Length: 217
Ligand code: E4P
Image (cartoon, rainbow, N blue to C red; front, side, top):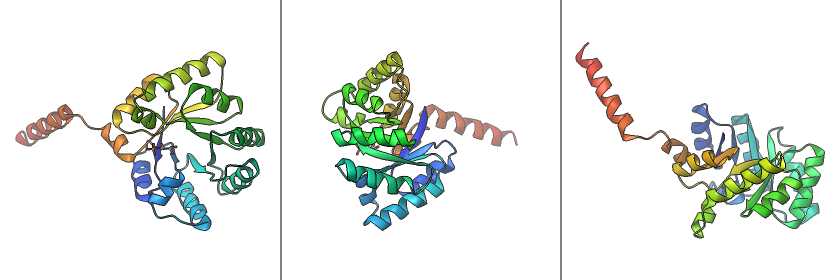
């Protein structure tokens, strides 16, 4: 399973990249706004900086909702760097745009996916990635990871090549459960990635090893 970081915060992207386990970055308009990145030029420049920091796929989201607008915006985003992935919402015109970019050989990420039916449509349209939002599903009293399992089952059975990108990750257990459920990629906040490191027995064991090593010096 690939690890993406789900943020537009450059310091966090650098920290995750320095770990040596980062495969890419996802952003969305809310994450850009959180970092105070405002205006078209600033947004494009911010994506350019992220693309220079990380070698892997960088999802850049369109904010148009009509076919022509999505295509125009997606072309501008795709021109920023070869590792840009055009992130397109799961709407009717979005499906048409996914097919267009797929035919052009431009990578895409179909976002705001909450059902297996939507995931089938994204795959049929040739999306490179499909992003089920598992945390938001959990927030509405459903099990988001079950959706990952269902999509994984369908894609394997049907031979779809679209990669399942588990999004809206809320904690480290989500990452483990998404790996078990067959996600190809997990896009996570930095704290959820770092949370995977934690185990009290590791801390206790290391403290004992260091104490014993010191005692015998
Ligand atoms: C990633 O592609 C999504 O934009 C993101 O994971 C959404 O996460 P949230 O539900 O925490 O906003």
